[in-house]
Amino acid sequence: HLCGGATNGSIEALCRPPLDAYVGACCLAPCCHQKTKREQYCNIAYLESLGFCEMHIGKRGSVEDNDFKNFGRFINTSRAKSLDDFEYKHKGILEMLGFSRSAELRRKARRLLKEGRLQYLRDHGF
Image (tube, rainbow, N blue to C red; front, top):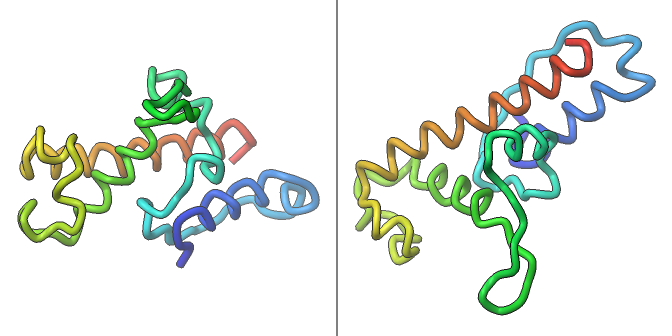
């Protein structure tokens, strides 16, 4: 059970010395994908190669990555049965897309993060 960024930290540790010389396979149980922060994710380069997660200057002048934030927002709707049940229902993108489209994107966002982790492992010999 690896909550949020712990999954990524574990993957990165498996790919560095000394563990990379001893571990030939691994089984991880990631959860709480929405708690992962951009700086914890192990393969931002993968997401960027797909056109996601480019940094830009936000409304208040801070450097932001709205794509990664929105992945978390979509994934976080997992427990809700409708947008009205969801605690972040007033987030603009969720209101704009509606619950069914947000639910579809939730599955895709989670899959995208998993695919990036898998690619990271492949790139490091797993």
